[in-house]
Length: 243
Length: 234
Image 1 (spheres, chains in turn red, brown):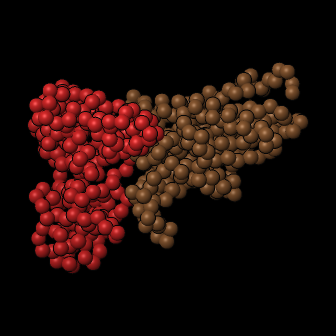
Image 2 (cartoon, chains in turn blue, orange):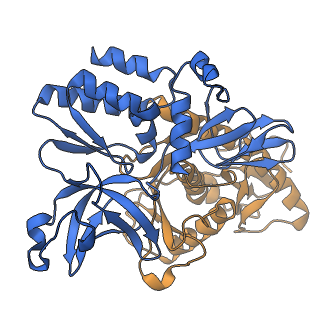
Image 3 (tube, chains in turn cyan, orange):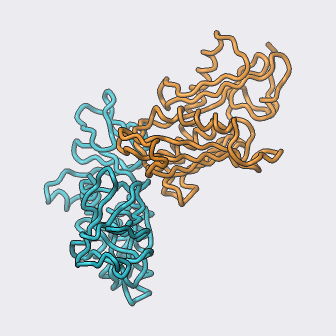
């Protein structure tokens, strides 16, 4: 579900003509809607995520940005807590070490667990804190969500303990916009500020660099995007900012 | 009935106190809002959905709502002893029941949504201001909800039905005395989620009260709507 959202966010990133060339449904202007507000009226429309049909109207089910893509109307949340999904890359902090893994705080309702078997190399059970100690910050991937909680994995590229640089947080709902269409926004920031950014779906962002000035610029750019996701043509504005 | 009934602060019978509302007042919360009726100011913060402890309260079919309402100790002229009281527990529960009908928490099994409602300045009508703030804060927290909840206290001073009583009017003692009739309803519908009555009112006049509540709730809804839409214009 999160993936669809991301794509929709990204689709509207470009100008309208670009979208037409790709023969995707045209995304009309987005607007902020409140719960119970009528977004559009008419028999032709189909309610998608965050919307419902009430008689002749399509009504919002939550506070967010409404988006009409062709006949489909949906509401994208813009505030609120992180709702974890499978395959999300998240950044978290080690809060406890147990017999067979680490308990990680990823800012979600359920606690996350990284089993020792999911670490990229063999770890001696008696020396687990050599690999990840309490308070360490890491990038991990959610590989399953079940009754007990979230299970994390480090068995993929770019995952592991964070060393150097700094971590800060933005609202998790703003992350799709910071990443941009197929990572366009994030690569723009990386290129312009000469820094390396890792964005977790839970809203934690890690900037690793020796170049402090660039890092501060990158952070400002991320925060600017997070505060202005409702604006059109954000890419250009960020580009201007980073000149 | 008196020919020219005058309210002590010069308001018309159906006139609310000046309202103001703001969303996002508590940055650390997942959603927050402030709502005020004149001198009554309520703030609400929403945390969650988050894991519910104690575990035996968890519901695997749906998330639950937990409201905590309280007056700040400096909100009234005689210092209010901090901590839960019979009154605050009752209002917490009542606020919870008033909000629940519009929420859909099935997406978040085993979790809780905590709503903290605090009154930072009290001048009657604190529960209604609290419900209005909580409803906005829940929306701001991105919780799936069908509609907003609007709430207002209707009252009766002797024979006159008036809207949004302040403390002075609530303490009125002449004639039949003062009646307090807080109402909460789902915005733009005729569905009520809260009705309380403290005092006396003839059954025949309840319709009159509800008509006045509907009209006032429309005004309140506009204030709430405006505040939510302005969330990016800080």
